[in-house]
Length: 465
Ligand code: 4AD
Ligand code: MG
Image (cartoon, rainbow, N blue to C red; front, side, top):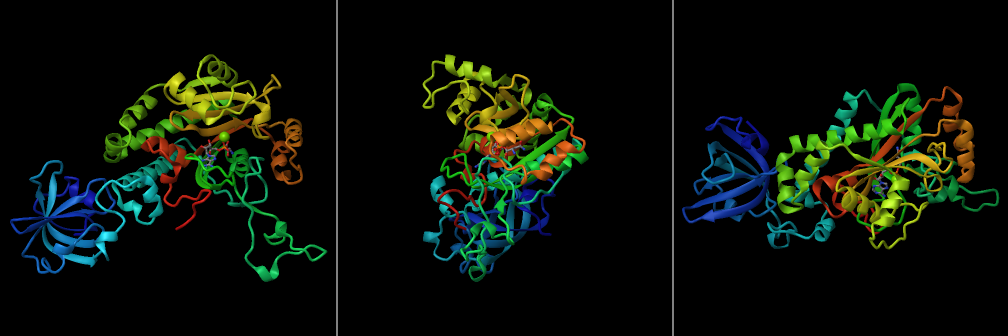
């Protein structure tokens, strides 16, 4: 029977059973006794399985002795208790079928040694074959599934919001515009000039920056909903925390205020961390050993303690009194910069912190104005090492207030007519947030750069593959 490396190593199969394992060679070592030890990985779990190949297999001299890292193999043999340390089982091989040798092993990019992250980004098509990217990929999957599972258990419905949109959900002007390649039929205005603004079947359209506005409409019918998909930002920020294409999960809850929203975000993050610790212990052990020693303990602490919650105004006071030198000076009214966010999460609290009630001028048009007239019911969850991982708010459910905020931000009410309808037809208080999925993955794995948290990073200056 064909089994995955994970199944073969699980201890659930009986010693002595005949199995077939398929995967890619990690290393080969030949012993003087005329045996080869071939480590094979198939991505199913962190550890490779060791196949012990005797010189008696038919293709030993012609193929087995030439296997190098990266070669594709199918090995059939007997599962036996392992002599070496670390693993319970190894595979005593009867046959080794080589599906693909590696052309020119000298130049195969993934050698059994530590490569720099910069180098691995240049071979994004091969980096999943490394220990690190295998682990990141499995943790990414586990986190995505944990998100769907947790929200489903809490009674949320997954709503698929559009990627092509006509309105700017954040009102920040960071959208990529769609453009046709049909050069012969480019849209033209009355004077015959090319009108790039009408490229989407005679209209202007963009890649979405957030599914929030669309998901709000479903919230005001289905009560608890979320959207989870790719989003796009044209901010030209070449930083370790920004991508041009990233995944965002955005839950939205009806009849909820900012505190309910923070409660929801807290339970949500804790559920994700719990799933990672329970389901990806092998990968997390690797991150703790090789990437960040506190990778596991900090998640455990984070689950064990309630989140710290502070008001923006209080946060500004803390930063001012800190005596710390910030590049960007602190004053009430500023948008907190990453250095400020990191100070709060790292130095002040020592773990993630929720900052609430920001000045209205620096936050999006849809956020609910507080009674003080100066702040909005916004919240950001800040994590050590990264800064903002979640941004959210109670939404402005009062039409007159919303219209005033839209005017203030110079937004055209006509484009947002359907969004205004939600305030005209049975408006209710509601709140939601957005989690930048890759930022959370960076945090969980202890990575340095968000480009290593998505299989094929798209950012200013990088979009190959
Ligand atoms: O704070 P943002 O812009 O909020 C929204 O988009 C709201 N519509 C969310 C909501 O309330 N439903 O983005 C939310 C999160 C940020 O906290 C950050 O984690 C992530 O998205 N994010 C990015 N991640 C990677 N690359 C970028 N360029 C990002 N921009 C935002
Ligand atoms: Mg934000």
